[in-house]
Length: 223
Ligand code: JDE
Image (cartoon, rainbow, N blue to C red; front, top):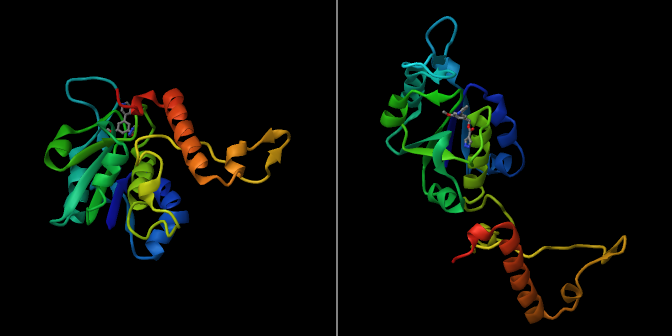
């Protein structure tokens, strides 16, 4: 997968996406990532990417010119253009998985109060929000989106277990987990996990998963 991120803060994506599993995905050739400074597509001497809103209102608006120039320079017939904005469709694991077949993503990072709507209408395929809160900068949201998509690419995890087995893929939260020591400052690992009784362990995990889902994420349970 090829991903181009367009932002006024390229350092905020280059560093986090250059290490760990995202860094390795690039070394393995699974991901071709490039982070671009939106200001390179400005033409005025102040390199402006924002202006006041028509009709008045709070804050500044990201203007058309640099964003159109960026997308026109980067796109190919198979690119999908994604805008990170709190006004977008809320991302979850199903939304993330829907992007894994894409050959090329161009990710525009929203900033300021808004983005000129002609960009959304003419260029953007998907407006994506990572959640119902406001960040200072869409580049932070882009890191989260890219990480979630790229870890699903075959070979990215290089891990014994597949991404398909993870929490959320089955619609519930998983059971709590424990490792050594059996007794830490008097806090003990549940006996069943030490029993070696696989059927009992499976039943316990299922029950605990349901219990945790009920307390932490009742919204995930079917009515
Ligand atoms: C992305 N979830 C949250 C913020 C913004 C008031 C102030 C600022 C037009 O694009 C944006 C992008 C962002 C940064 O991204 C997020 C985000 N997923 O906050 C604003 C909106 N209203 C606008």
